[in-house]
Length: 313
Image (cartoon, rainbow, N blue to C red; front, side):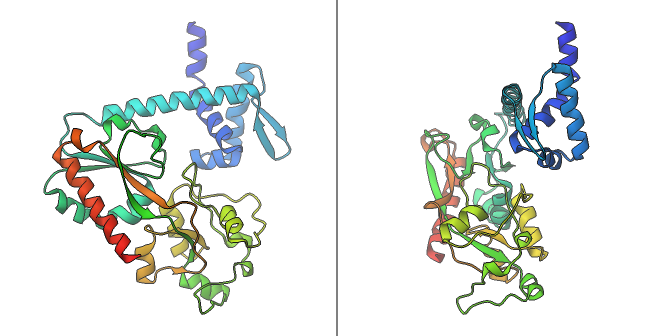
């Protein structure tokens, strides 16, 4: 037993690398996520396979897929990470802390909440608001979360919710990008996307959020899709929008998150709007009858902001 424990303990880093490789179906994306080189990822996988005495991946030239053993082990690691993250969150969020705990994604926090946070603090009248940002909502222990901005309300079906932002997706780029690429814009404020090189399209990893990707956008719009190959997506929306502002390419903008940038003229809306559902974001919260006045105040502020958005659109 002691020998097995030592072997497992010495393999923890390699197990995390293996789980990322299975999740991304590739060593390159796993390396990027973990800030490692691709050879380092390969070495970790080789070490695991040597210690286990079995193959964890099927290798077909540059393509990989997990073997049955690899998938089982990756699932076990993911389950363990999820449990640790849940307990970590529980330890961090103590019951006796005053105020409310609000969870949301990085993109929502950066593009929507941050510009309004001073207004929220005023509305809370001295009640502290602790913000937890994560794009992995499934890792959160919602017993310790008073309210969360989510895109799927079915995960915690017993909690009430407030629709916040109407779902609307459209291409955006910077004025500098259009000028450098000499792309003309129609009177309707749209460009011919077929004029662009596939490498000009910036991609975002939407996970299980249901947001449109470039592939689903082109399909729904009935447009000819560029040959994207295997693009390297951004895994944080603020980083994606920074690349757009720097003129590095064209990306999909989401109503509610890019409105301020559009109003200032920092980016331009250059294509038709599409949607895959009625609402893109909801505020899901503890039942009012069971909540403190702080949660009532927080929900009231979000309801007022949602009403402002409905009036604007």
